[in-house]
Length: 467
Image 1 (cartoon, rainbow, N blue to C red):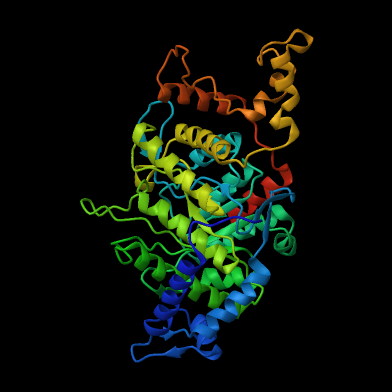
Image 2 (cartoon, one colour; image 1 turned 60 degrees about the horizontal axis):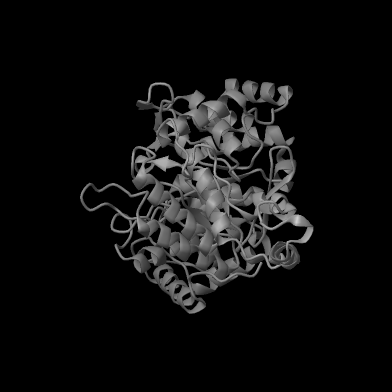
């Protein structure tokens, strides 16, 4: 797919060189024995402080392998149908994970998340039409990750991005995916999910993170190694400094993964928002994160790999004007930069809160943004020369465009069609938040996601009870 990234090739090359310098000079702290051995056996060096210094040639080898195995990653629906093709130049949107709080639809209060919130939010996101799913809600229980994934996979057939607190959570989550797919080999052949794996910024490859990454690489399952390198918090406050560090962390993880399995499939990129200097909180509505997404998309294009992105979140607690501005701004940047796998749609309150109304609103924003940025249609039907001639010459008694059959045939595809609750001169009987509540309630009352087979639900329940 031909497109022009917002990051120039020269800029991408300079950032790549900066990341290589970080890996060769500062290196990474590696806790996992196997990961250390893989790196040292391949030609990395250990300095006097025990840090592993990774030379540029190992990164070049890893990128060459990755371009062959991960330049195009096909992800499938729960039922084995092709769903999203991860490659530079394509953009897919989905919600986020691990929100500790939920806006209760009935009371309007913010409360701690519970397991049933996963089912409700995934149902709403499925109806809205997001391309992939994340669990959104995270109940405050130990080892809850396989349980929330079990809820997700029963309420949508769409592919997923999954998180896990530790290696056991990740392994158990993938066991559920294998049950649904029909076995490990079937899931390898038609992956239905992507694992979200992180290093600890700055430049710390902890034992749990490496165990997850090595598991994903060994099994050939697609994964991320996305650092949380936030400007002024866990990375330099400057955008270039944060990106060069986070990109070094990704490249170091890529080296480990491809040393474990040369066919490892990884999505490039990281998360680089900013720290609010008044509260020390990480911002979900800052322009810095939108800029970082565009930069990581450019780095993905430079490497020939799909990229990880963010859009549709806000620091506000309500779906208000601030939330709308921040969410739409980041959606536009993600589309313009062709970020590949764009998560966190609908997040509020700096990543702590999910409000199902915001899922409906950001889904609408994506459709509007895609219409705004769509390539110009220059087909004969779109140019409409015959229609212009008909109306100008009053052929067949038609002297206006609203009466012409061309308008009737094409207006739904040619124009952005807002929902009934969108104000366009008509008098609405409620505020936008109230109308969004009605939209969510209608979805929950009428939308039935594609059901999972009863025998697979039973097998999942049996497995969860055995843990």
